[in-house]
Length: 107
Image 1 (cartoon, helix red, strand yellow):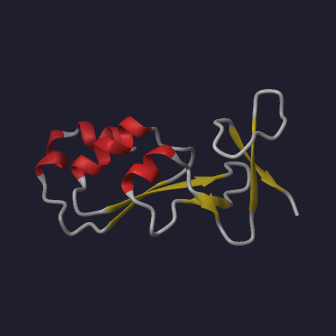
Image 2: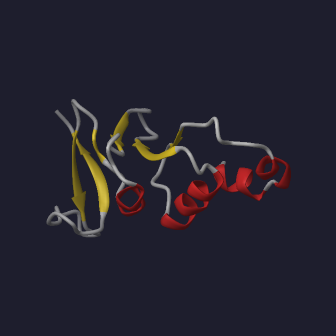
Image 3: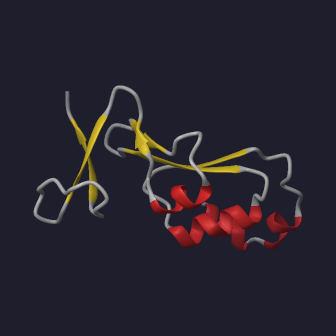
C-alpha cells in the first residue's frame, strides 16, 4: 500500500507535516521502502509492525524510542505477552543478531 501511495503524484503533492506516526503492518517492510517513507513523511515516527496473518495477532513492533536507523534494520521487539525466536531455513533457532524468519513461541 505504501509503495502505491508513494508512486502517486497527487499523494506526494499534498502536505504531510501533520502526520506524526506511520506504522507499516503485515510482513516486515524493507529498508528501501522505509527510507522512501521517511522522505515522504519527514516529521513522522516510522514503525514496523509484524503480525501473523493466520490469527491477526500483532506480535512485534518497533519500540517507541527506536531511532530510524535501527528501525530500518529490525522488525522490532515482541509486544508484551508474546515471545519470538528467529530461526534459519532448517528451523533451528539462530543466535542474536542473525537474519532469519521470526517465529512466535506459543504459550
